[in-house]
Length: 297
Image 1 (cartoon, rainbow, N blue to C red):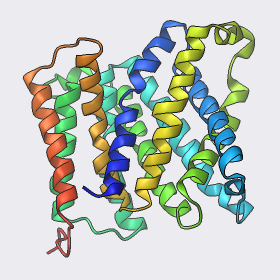
Image 2 (image 1 turned 90 degrees about the vertical axis):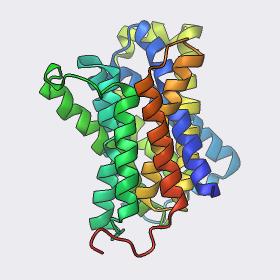
Image 3 (image 1 turned 135 degrees about the vertical axis):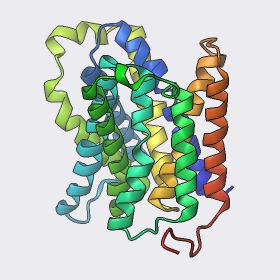
Image 4 (image 1 turned 90 degrees about the horizontal axis):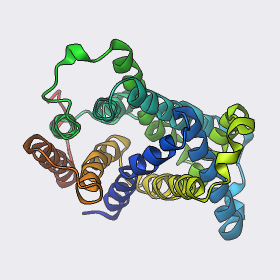
């Protein structure tokens, strides 16, 4: 497997641990948007310190107009998709929210076709079908009575998928001028600037002084956020946006495995089938180069 694919999969695997941190922060009384703010704020601080220490020149912008890329990744992607994801979890269920989030690979493939002229090939369609079907099995959307899901949760959940897809799209533009560390840093700095003014510091500052809260907030900002996005964007620089998005669907598999081995959750036969489908889709898209095999052939 190519190094780029390995980086993308590791980043997605770290994303699969997000629920562990979020679950504990909810227990302290934080709302979904407040957890998003903590996530991006801590990540922005960690990334800024890292860049200042290791490569301060990476903070240099070629043009101030390039901020539009980071407004795209920071606000239209990170802020928007996190809010939609956590809101869907609040009004519906985590399985439904996760399944709707993973409509992103299909959205990336369609958007990339129009924006980057990336071919929609037969191989990509097969891989998308495997990964999307597998995700639905893993998170429990299949089998499920769809009439029990509110339309608002479906629409907001699809919003999370769209926002998630935007990161790959805007990053692809930014990667023409900047490296992955610069993109990730500015993404979270812009998101933090947009969100921090709305955080209720007067009401919940005392919570931030608790060591346990700092542990989960710092952990959320470091491993499944700052570090994960750096290596994902690094991998994205070396592969197609649509292929990277498909590879990232290993996230729900990792989340399921964490539930089994850390939280002692049981695994059903449907989830096992789903994980096999997702891993199969990842191996399929990695093993085929899609050369000349578009759906119009």
